[in-house]
Image 1 (spheres, one colour):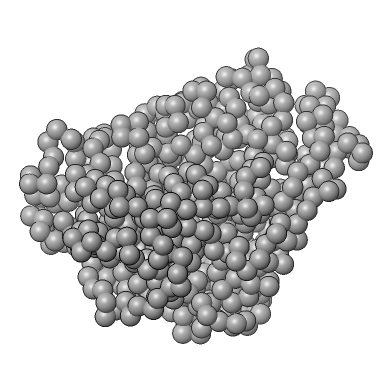
Image 2 (image 1 turned 180 degrees about the horizontal axis):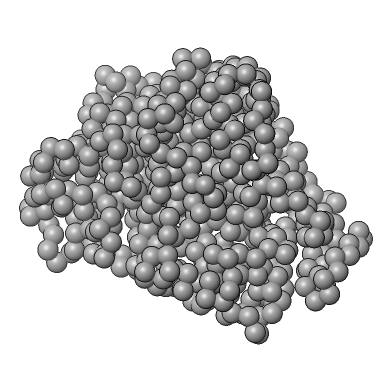
Length: 575
């Protein structure tokens, strides 16, 4: 990373992010009454001093993680995006911003953690806040190693600056980075309370992340099989969360993503945003990036020209060339993930009686703020997750209005359902299936919520869990990292699936949808309404599972182009 960024991280973290909100969870120090000498003087100030780690440093990563997590993985279509055809290079603006955002999280977490050591507050609160810092640091490194592979370890930004070694850092082998993440989480678990306030990171948040880290690490350096000790630890931590955290799945899947449930019993780790533009980066902007033109009143939505992929539609068992009247919506996650012809949403545009997808598109003059007038998405569907609706929906959910590119909708990055599926996969391990009752129960808990008619199986396969993860976590920025995890020990399987996906577009859907809206007749002309017959498989190779470093970082530090080094992290670093 560039020296100016390291310096900024230390300076900014010592000053804090300056905004004061009306919600206790997001209260932070105000600029006119905070400096290094008069803050961290009591419990409240310590909590305020760590709150901004739940949003601002993550902003640029969050805006790009759909491109990595979903477009690269084949879950989402975004036109000419280099993430769609695996042509991302080190000059890509999204890649650069995401990288710097992750390093920013690490820098802020390091600095606040060190500052808390001398805070004048109760040891219980100091420990809690230090533990939260370490979980955010571990999460940043978890994204870094799964995105870029081997990366440098910046354990203490202040020490790095004082030592002058910032432009000579070497990459550290991925296995060692995973060990560093585990060491960091072990310390976080030691510091955190078993159960914290709803929405805050607690001990079980860290244990849930630890389970996911161990499951991912289990394939590092393996050929065809995974490390059994790592799989066992993944299962152990996941089971602890399932049995002892007091967490549970929300009964209705779509409710997880609503404003009113920003803090809920299912979500273990979330980015909690606040609808403010001062400072810029404390807010959620994903609705602007993903929603159709005219979806809210602010003229700030431009994402309608992309949407969930044809291949993801196939996974859900739906097809836009099938009449909506004949569609079988057995999986409730489908509608909560993608809008299709005929869909109406009661939780969007509540002041207008709900949101009608086709009416919004084609009745631009009389319905709401006015839709685009024609279908924008070439896959025939549009995004649902990460949308809050209109200003009235935001007021109903949070008691405060949204604004241009600004909402308070939380982004959930580790949910209990993920932990259930981690447990099921870890128990299956290197086998193809299992009849273990606890693993089946974990899988079935997730499956049955989504498909109420589903019956409990007598065995489950790795393939079933693999697909269930896709459907459960679709469009949440996670799927690409499943492929990275798979590529560690079975790259052939990962490459084969990516190459076989339907990642391209349909033709003629606007005429089909408009006719259906006007006449209620859904008549397919196979010469006009069809999937692109010239669609090409993406050029995926084993190297595709590691994205390049930003070019300017490599120019600044040529050591990043050299082979990674081995570091005994437990002897080299300590907390």
